[in-house]
Image (cartoon, rainbow, N blue to C red; front, side):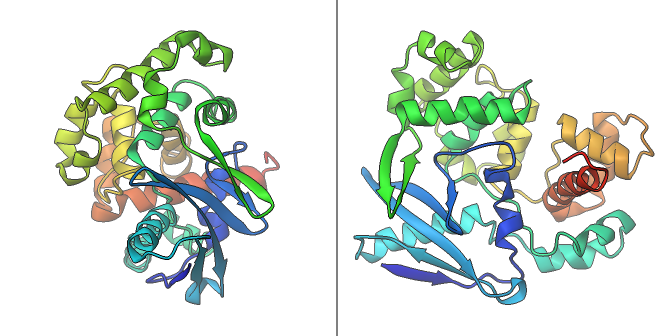
Length: 305
């Protein structure tokens, strides 16, 4: 089955998918031969698919190839996941109109035109990634996460390439802590991941229900889970639920971006950053992602890679 999606507004697929290779390999979201390779878990089945972007940024198309699939419901499930991964629900045109009133954001629109924040395909995948990234650099986090995917995920062949289905909760719930340690996770992070998986499998934590839950209630529920604080909850709202009025002000990268672009290098408190971000209203999430990408541009311009 082949499906074509037409984004509403610009889409720069390369810039949008950059986070899947900036800090290392992601076996569950592979970029190969100009396409994104991924496996959807759908009603107990594993459905591998490939997505390729075609056309210019202002008239892009996403072409999905789903081998061996003929039923419409599976095709729509794949399309729904692709819309999340490519951030198609974000109102990029509205954000650009708003950005004109902010000199910093206005200057970032042209070099980052068409970049959309990617949303995590599933809540479990998002939260395991968040645990992996706690208090370590992203290269190390990606390496640990890649080992986890290869250990408990399921490899499938797609053309000439292999892509892994991200592990399900049941597999992670049964994992032994020494296995996490062998993958260079700390013992505590291994406990956090296993506790999360067990909470999901038992039904104590209904991650899917959070999509319809007010943001404050999502923060309250997630921070009750061992290993999760406000940092994780904010990024879950931003990068999994796609809430527009969210700023992960406790994130070190976000703080540095605000200091660089708005603070003249001066340290700003979390509350000061949140107050500044509120001026962007429903476009806070987009603005923060553009500031983070702008910092990467600044480092490259300075020769920092």
